[in-house]
Amino acid sequence: MSDANLTPEDILVRVQLTPNPYALKFISNHPFKLRGKATFASQTEAEGYPLVMSLFGISGVSQVYLFQNQLTLTHDGALTTQEIVQQAESVIKTRMPIHNAAFETEDEKQTVAKPDRSTLSPELREVEEVLDRTIRPGLQADGGDVEVVSYKDDTISILYQGACGGCPSAMMGTLDAIQGILQQELGKPDLKVRPL
Image (cartoon, rainbow, N blue to C red; front, side, top):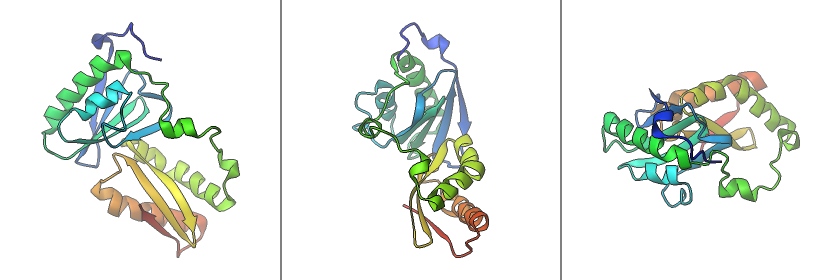
């Protein structure tokens, strides 16, 4: 629910750089998303979410990722970091009072019963457990995440989210780390991980 009693002065925002030079992480004293996470890739996708729509009004913003009290903006570099920070902080402070952190995206609404991991294959459950324990905490700390899309024929397809999407280190170093950790933890030296 939105909190109309909030004022811009009540909103505290801290900015952190991420390993992706085109992504900035904003941490607030109020949640952006109470449950789950959400990624928006355009103003059209953000329709009905005034905070997110307003962030897309900033020149060059190409993605907005929300997770708990973190918001990650990915941009094209058209504006300086200082300009983006200044504009984004202004939007966050003025839009947070009307922002509903309990929102669900259309995808979340269409998923009537969210499958828990007990319905996954034992192999996929093991992959998710390894990622939760080793990789996700670091990615989430940098304003990103990774989603396992499929696991077939010793190939795991993943989708980077938030700051990880389009990050140069995600495509090289992080991908190598994910593959190496999964190969070792699962005892499958021929396992391949590929980003979508």
